[in-house]
Length: 233
Image (cartoon, rainbow, N blue to C red; front, side):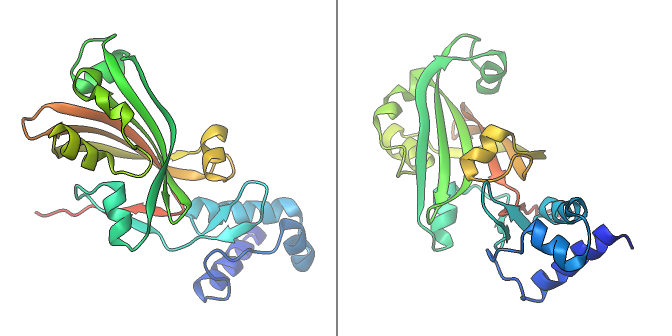
């Protein structure tokens, strides 16, 4: 077993035994290197391994801490706000952008509209009890939902607004999930280090008339989320 692996296993044992609890800071790379008599590069590599596994979180400009319990996101049709409230957390959003733009080829294809047609873009950071968990980018057909820009997008569920204000009920979605690493811009949103693991979902949603109403991408923190898929044969 390499020294790097020995270090990561020691830290893993401290986490799994409860010696290092959720959100507790681990010793700095310099402190660990001095304690163990190894180079900081070796310690950094061992910490990187645990960060990639989701056991540790590197916070931008701050100490590395132990990950909190992960949120299991299932295949059910539940909005972010509904999901957080079911867990006893208070959801809210920080609206980074809510505007009108022209659909490019990709967005037009996802929404079944012409390239260049007007769409609404809503970018929000989603919080639970003031902790940023997800960053979403939603596109909606402008002709149908233009009035949504005048509504409260920071404190309301988007699906609730669609149903209550527009009589549109989202009932079916196709979604893909892939593992990615956060860019510098994305990591800054969450206060994490660039290269932090994340889960990226791409979704298109239909209403009860089988009409495409939404195209969305959502970036979930990899240290806080796991995807759960139920299958039946």
